[in-house]
Length: 223
Image (cartoon, rainbow, N blue to C red; front, side, top):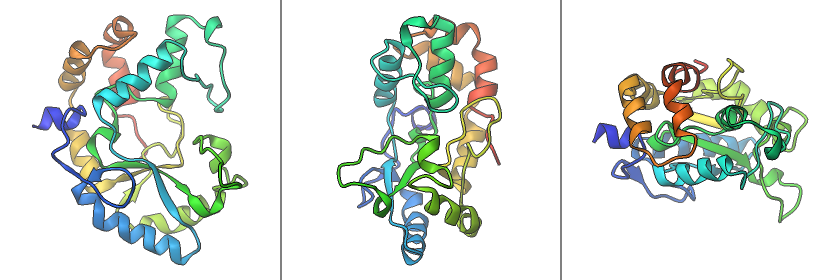
């Protein structure tokens, strides 16, 4: 069960709520509290992502590997797929997307959020870019509020800072009490087994550098 939960192959731990996306059962009460407190301050928190299974993450990964989804540089600006080597494609994907089976979203403890009442138009498509969540961006007020009040809740930003792995994601929140336990359980052996048994593009490159990728993109988080 632990392997399946850690690698996105199980849904038994999930609760289906009014959040629009499934989350871990343990997340429901504290997330409700956070949303309610933010609402009092004028910020309507909505999820744009919650639980994401192995197959869904594989689809995202493979589409990026084939150039069917945008690849972004460190600043969230689009790259020219045709000009990139396989190694550069891999690096660009890893900067913004987890390896299938190695995403914190598999656990249901991690969410991506935005502020619904800050959307500039009714049909605005949220992109989750650094520009949107900058202090002067459309979601800046929400995140400045979170900077001040998030320590009062059992959530943290695992990608708050650029540590050379995943790019900073101000919108990504994690339920600390449980996600910390699950990360401790996510060993390199599990990481390697997952890659070996996954049908994903760039698999050879992933296996060639598996230990470094595990250190850089899985356990290398802001605490």
